[in-house]
Image (cartoon, rainbow, N blue to C red; front, side, top):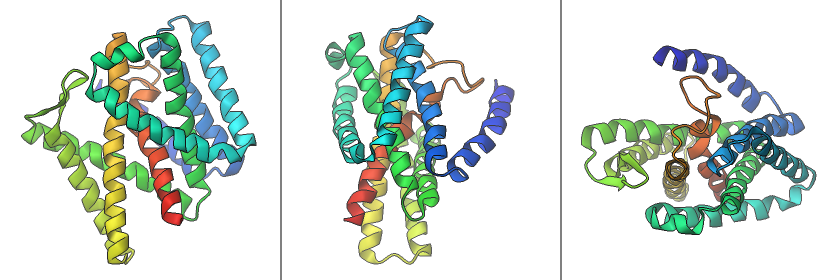
Length: 268
């Protein structure tokens, strides 16, 4: 298993880095769209569609919506706004699971939720890419999420006692969340010092980082909730040793649109 994980990572990492940082404009949008469409194919399974035609059809619908969004960039604020509302609702659904499953257990609500997760993630990356220092900002949100994951793993393993959401993901603890948050805040503070932020900028940067980290945890728990309700361990086997695309980007699907909205608010 470890060998598979390493080989898959060595193959995917250069592809991902080239796609994120070398592609521009429509090429970048297409690259991210392919990843999101694969995620849609996996999500259809979480929504209860095992047959390939139905799963492919949902992926095609998502790809078509992404194309329309690319043609009409004016919808971006609405898409990102919908994401903020969705992830606020998702926090409630995760905290009240399994009782909350009565509200979304049908196929139609699950497919709608899939759109609310996948479309804003694409929109957020496209928006960030267009900003000054766009590549660095994309790297920033990824480092925040990865730092939170690493900090949570070691902190949870060493100190984890209080379960975060035992009905959704029994292995996660509040101590892990705090450890992940602490590491991400340290990373943010170091960046602020290197870039000579003012006190006000530092406060806003740390607050924004905390929001992104907490919402990334919700993103992770949300996919776990749907997998648990569907009785599925991994979203697919597309990535040997790693599960599926959604298993790798679940935290980012939540963090990216929220990060994009925070950047937009900071610009205002």
